[in-house]
Image 1 (cartoon, rainbow, N blue to C red):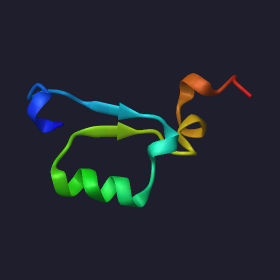
Image 2 (cartoon, helix red, strand yellow):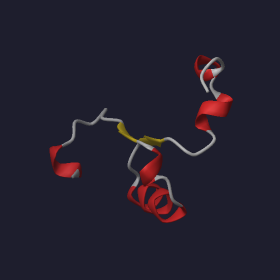
Image 3 (cartoon, one colour):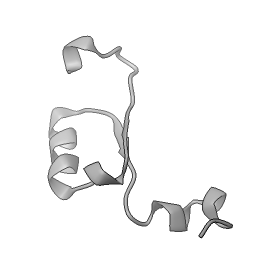
Length: 51
């Protein structure tokens, strides 16, 4: 994928992609990405009022 991404691309993914293996692969490939984890909503103040 690196060949088609702009130099400032940030990849985002939902919680289904959050795993130690995926995080290690991203780190070793030096890919900038944000992947939600199971506890993201409990830490984010935007979700305080949601059940």
